[in-house]
Length: 169
Image (cartoon, rainbow, N blue to C red):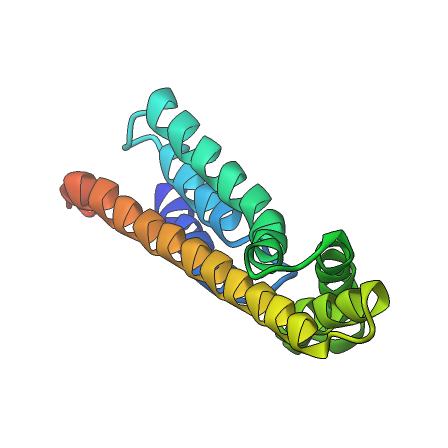
């Protein structure tokens, strides 16, 4: 059973990397589930501090994933209309355009929101939309980095106990 959990946990940490780019999977949280599964084996001792800290990081990154694109819009001069446009664009983009909607949705939403706010200043609208795109790239990079770290932590924990998993006794 431990070997099954070992492979299942590794599958989840790898799925966490994929989830960094796909909106349907919360990447770091999926990777954390892999760490939890690894700790459910009889061989690796349960480390509640480790699991608690990594869960907190995964949840914070998951929350920031929704905030950072709106922050990018505001940082590049967008108004509240652009910020709300980013949020609605992200949601509608995911629903109607799938994975491509993650990129197009916030950009288009910020642009449309800014154009609703001030239809005479398309330059500002494009700048705010670009800020949304930068925010998206930043949040995706952050999720990817955390997911890679979770894979490293998984492999590190496994490496410490590999001999126990594969002993011939």
